[in-house]
Image (cartoon, rainbow, N blue to C red; front, side, top):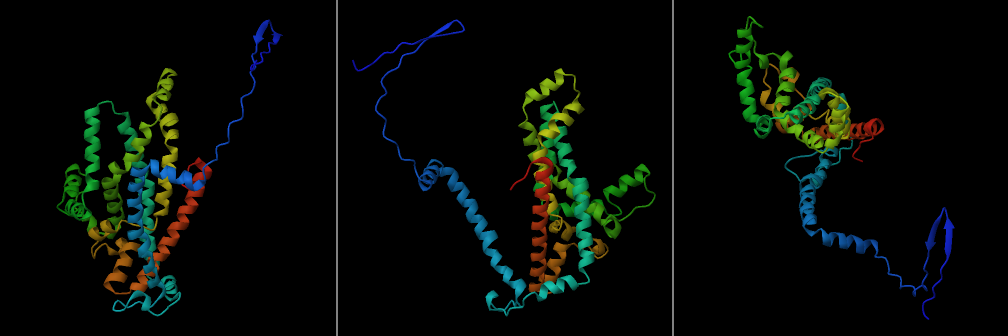
Length: 338
């Protein structure tokens, strides 16, 4: 017989086990494991459509982000617009030394950091709060209406929005009309005509434009939370505030940490279009931010090498802030993008 049957009885805790052992079949031939290149090629083959979509993004990044990096040579050379970039004589760190000795830089950095600081302190939590309020709404039609209306300003150019803001903040504008009618002021004030109010106008108008759009990511993060968590908290007697505090916020803390990291990295990057539209000779003392200064020095004064050096310094500082903020976020919340 080709099959040998062995019966063994095991008595353990009153249970009888019957085992049947067959003759082991011949060992199958070992299948060679595909190489890393073959696995990579097979993955690409399975995901052809996705890879084509990703490839278009990579090409776009190379054309508009990586190839222009060759222009950084301008910061290290005495560039002349009438000559090719790489024919300009080498200048070393001349323009970087000019940056550190420029008397206008302290005022420019003060305005840039001041506006960015209030945008983070005031503007960063508002989309989170707005997203939580939207997620708590039960009336779906009203919820969609509010959501749509809050998105609309994001799709309107700052050139158009700037015209609205200039009219609203004029002495005969909407804001002064409300202040006078409610008795909060006895005389009108030109908000954009006084440098003291420029930061407030810039921060509030930026929040108004970006609040709805910035809440999209948080709404998506809240929608991914397991509803059973809320049901269990509701059974335990937790009210709405406690469910938000103990379930919603801890569940989206990773998203908050990563977006806050990017916000910190952009401390030296102001909204150029907004400032360019709202600035005027009366508020330029508080409106002169780093991006506007680079534009005026580089384009209007023709100091291309110096403007490129200032822009490169800003990018280096932003990279350092990004790395530091990411490390801090990883330590505190365990969420990071690296």
